[in-house]
Image (cartoon, rainbow, N blue to C red; front, side, top):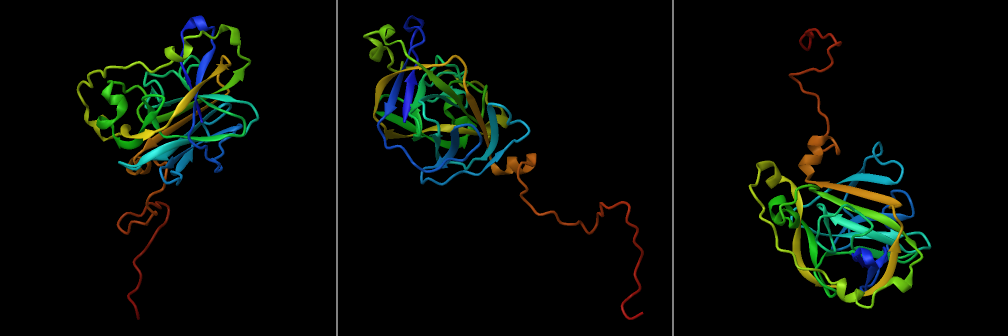
Length: 271
């Protein structure tokens, strides 16, 4: 799997890509359209239940709900079914999973890179070229984004897919690898917690995982070819919103909703 680090404007749009050296997964991803597919899986490889929004998933944008499970680790798995390399700007709760910065899913952000016909699994927040801290579902007050006071994209896993342009290798600076190192950020004050936010799901900053990487060159096209938005919620919220039918409908014996049906008292048995 691959990742791109943000560079300054003097690099003329040429980005650096970090190729994660972990083994890529070959399992088939959930197909939502296009030649790049995205799914959310558990650390054991099981797929979380998702509910696509067909009416809002049109063109190059795909949306779906996902059922989150409290305190459960998860990964984002992506499969590139095309022949060319692609760049993936990935954000969880509005924060870029590589840099940790607030994301707009823009081409100038840090991104992962996938070769043609390659699958990869992204396990967590990248803290160095050697390690990530795993994603896990938790209450919002314990989420990574809330530590920075950022509630702008609560409970959303977002992936923007960029095609590759032919890079101008002459414009790559010699000190580019050093400039691509992740800068430290001091967390902002979380501020006053509201009751609604406390009960919503978020993604935590979990256990450290060894995940070595190296740097390669990659230049993204100006606009993304595909965007995926996965809104994760607790099961009771999905039930309340009617996304999933959690209880079978049973007729209320004291409240007949069929107003047009007339009923009369029956004769007693044997009469």
